[in-house]
Length: 258
Image (cartoon, rainbow, N blue to C red):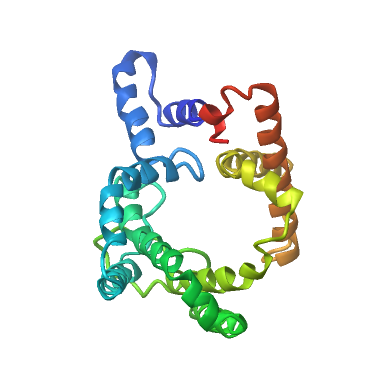
């Protein structure tokens, strides 16, 4: 799936057959950072997570007070660190540091889920309200979307980190009541989730290209347009993943991750 965007990256940056030896540099950069296509940063990042899995296993065995202490300490680092810029050489390493508290938080919530269900069930909309307050505060400050910056620059606190962590608790508690409900559609989405994730970047690029060629512009800041475009890209990505799984089931996992 990386062949086309890497080829495009090489062509756009003026690499020719005469300096073909230097292809190794852009190819290596793309494969190490995943910056050549939307969502592909996740692959080198998750490789680092797997490589450090022994640390996560050690974390599981710690007493809860030490788990919370480590989680809080790393969360403070993430809030100041922010997510990396799209084409940063530190993309994978910075992402590893930034997202590690979410993984640790998931471990804690998984281990203590029964306690969380008993204490917080029925209070999920209070949790949601707190998360929304932080989201509104972020909008009020004027930051739209994720916070991105180089690792050694100082900027504002990452409110996206805070309210997404709170939303995680909300969805965990809220969706608990539906754990025994069977859904054919959700099963289908779950089976194709990685395929959707790795394919949707292509459809976004196609959408932007068509929009540019047709010289077409949407109403600015239209939430309705945003939702409609998101649904169309999601459905096309799902159908493409299903088609690939149907046509070449033996190799689909190697090609699209599903």
